[in-house]
Image (cartoon, rainbow, N blue to C red; front, side):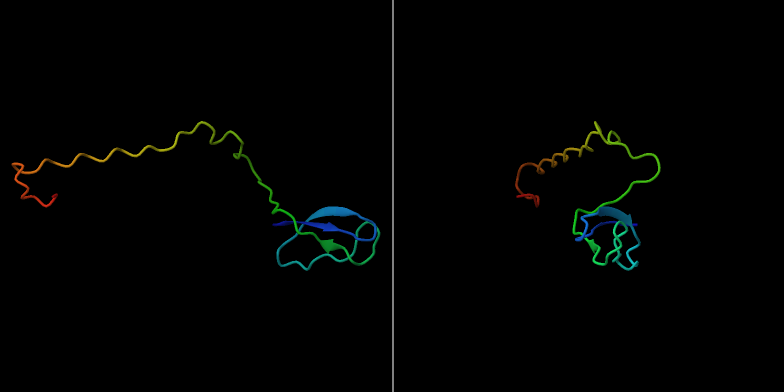
Length: 85
């Protein structure tokens, strides 16, 4: 579920709310009760749940190496009759 940030223009109260995308936006300030509680535009917020995600999970992991291409076989007799010239 996304985390939305709201602010009240009357009292300046600001809070993050965990809501479904299908939920209607909040309009009443939980602090002073006035209407006009508005959703702020901010960086995307998310929560990782469970265990297993750590900052060091991929530290030091080497990038997979690709093998060098094999050398082409030499031309038959050096006559240039092969299709590589």
